[in-house]
Every structure is written in C-alpha cells, then in structure tokens.
View 1 (cartoon, rainbow, N blue to C red):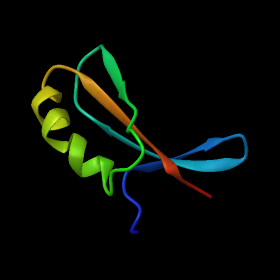
View 2: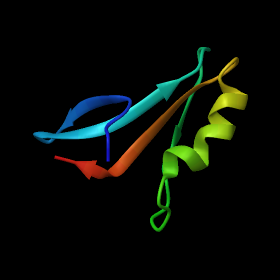
View 3: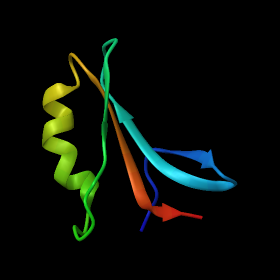
View 4: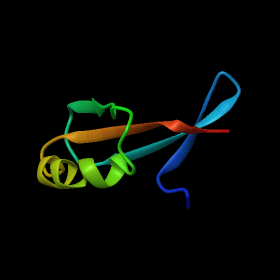
Length: 64
C-alpha cells in the first residue's frame, strides 16, 4: 500500500493521518475494521464537509 496523508509519531511508531478541509471545527473519523480502504469509504463525506469543517482520518492499521 502506498502511503498518503502524513505520518504522526505515536508512542515511537508512525501513524498515517489524512487531513482535509477548512474551518475552526475538526471532526475525527475512526474507521471500523473490515473495510479494505477506509480512506475511499470516507472520501465522499470528507469532500462534502471540507468547505466548512476540517476532517481528520486516522488509519489505525498502518503503523510502523
């Protein structure tokens, strides 16, 4: 899997984080397990909200 977004250090490991949107408020989207690509699942929602809300999506399965 090719990484996207940015890496954030958490307890000495890197977590993949994708941030998109504008606005003072931020929502954090946590994917459920069992989906092949949570980023693609959330993409329509993130795109719709991006003009008014900053969305942050964490990929909990991709940590190194």
